[in-house]
Figure 1 (tube, rainbow, N blue to C red):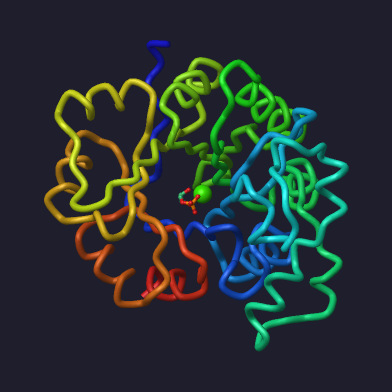
Figure 2 (cartoon, rainbow, N blue to C red; figure 1 turned 90 degrees about the vertical axis):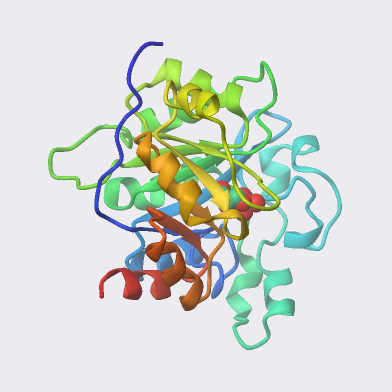
Length: 269
Ligand code: G3P
Ligand code: CA
């Protein structure tokens, strides 16, 4: 597509609630998203994986072990099977001071559960994790967003209602073909200092509105270079006040954070 990628808002430091307010409640569950919304997050962040039966599970890991204590892979299970395991037991065990008995009943949501719960009352920042080639994950995500009216632009909105993100460039390019109006973020996993060539930045501008990079890789020269090409820079995953302040100072446009209350407070100063 020759369509220009959608612009992101200027002069607003975005608080992206990473897996919800996941420092305080079990990640990727409705209570974590409700708290993120209450804390004033600009976006709730969801990771999506495709189940064996082609549904969209809201979960970070391919392996079930860390979140559920059980074994197996998301891609080997149906959504109905996934919904039988607890998404809160492991959180309670790891966070006794935050544990609540009710979390044991929490289940792994699918995308439509979150869209139904929040509708257009929040903004969504959705990651396609390991999108399988040829499985239609991009179309499935777009269809669900359209079905729930999430992609409709409203003149009253200050922010785009949906941002889509992935480490997978081909997947983002497919999304851009389908809906060039939805802003896309290309994720990178730089180990040390982030760097992209002028050619890479130019190619990015053909489909993406910005990039997402790890906090340890972020530095002022790089952010200046990327923003000079009119691409935004969002940084993951940043939970400490001093780190958020450093990123604001070097020009980052937002952070993925497990503590959206902290980021919001700083950004409103
Ligand atoms: O999506 C940005 C950031 O969340 C990437 O890290 O592993 O938490 O999905 P991860
Ligand atoms: Ca993510």
